[in-house]
Amino acid sequence: MRAKLYGAMPEPVDEQEVTPLELFFDLVFVFAITQVSGFVSEHATWLHLAQGLAILAVLWWAWESYAWLGNTAASDEGTMRVVLLAAMGAMLVASLAVPHAFGANGLVFGFAYLAVRLLHLVAYEIVSRGDPELRGVVLRLATTAVPGALLIVLAGALHGVARDVCWVAALAIDYGGLALRGVDGWRVQPSHFAERHGLIIIIALGESIVSIGVGAGALSLSAGIVAGALLGVAVAAALWWAYFDVVAIVAERRLRSAPPAEQVRLARDSYTYLHMPMVAGIVVFAIGVKTTIENVGHHLDAVPAAALCGGVALYLLALSAFKRRNIGSYNQPRLAAAGILLVLAPVTSHVAALLALALVALVACGLIAYEVRRYAAARERIRHTDTREAPAPGD
Image 1 (cartoon, rainbow, N blue to C red):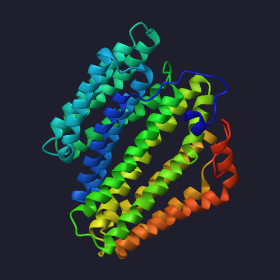
Image 2: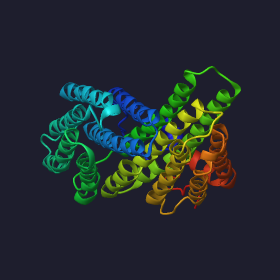
Image 3: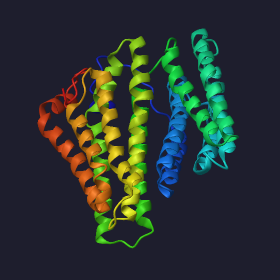
Image 4: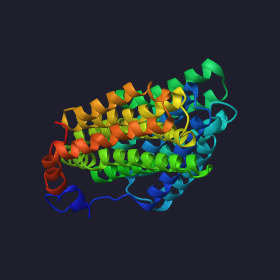
């Protein structure tokens, strides 16, 4: 199955697969995403949007840490299984606290997040026994993971600007620390790593479908709501197509063919860093589409309108940067589509919500139709040959 999808390997190799426990762990992240989109949708203000994105960034880093762990450990047996299940419990508590992570449940969120990070270090300590190089990696990781998590705990005890400064500092330590410390000593299994991140994109897209259902669920179905739901699914399908049709295939082949040191840098840049704005874009779009379904006959407020257009634009920008990191060139049609959506964002708050969603669907689906026609030969070569480093559409 994998050979048909990604192209045959030049020689037989044993490839690690995503384990059932990893998929089980990801279900908690699904709930966390749902909590974030629900938190912002309930009171769609710029402040809530910023807070929601900050929470998502923190949770993403926790999930990403366990993605690297699973890629290194290649096992869900024995003690490792117990540690991961305990981490699931801590992540669930953090997810439950999301709606009030900047308020009454700030300390609950902080301590749960700290537990998630500490359990991650415990698991890595287990994996690194007998491997001095990996042990050094774990020690470097602890110097950013623990201070960052402690700042989130401290933020839960503070208010106002001091709380916000702690959140910004925590994110800067985590995201900046990895870039500054480098990735010496890390190892990556390309197929497993690419597959895990492809699955998380599907999970995020699933959240956008859930948002459509939640938005329509409390209302009597009308022609407008049905049309809005179909338009929302069309956008989600376009986002899926934009990633999985060619980009995911080329990126995995590039990762697999790179030398070991470059593999780790590619994994960090292309997946750890650049998949975060992809997921964020999908979540932001989900916030906008949920509000749209609830108000198909009315105008959208500024934040939901910006979320509807800006979420898809952010996703396309991240995809283009993803291509730039892997292939060396940006995807011009996707940059153009993102620019159109950003121009449309202020317009969509002055038209009916259903029309606003229709405009976003037109841009997203129009982009996919253009790429399918314009790059038909390249798509055929990439999807149905064994070329390992073929250029992606948009060159």
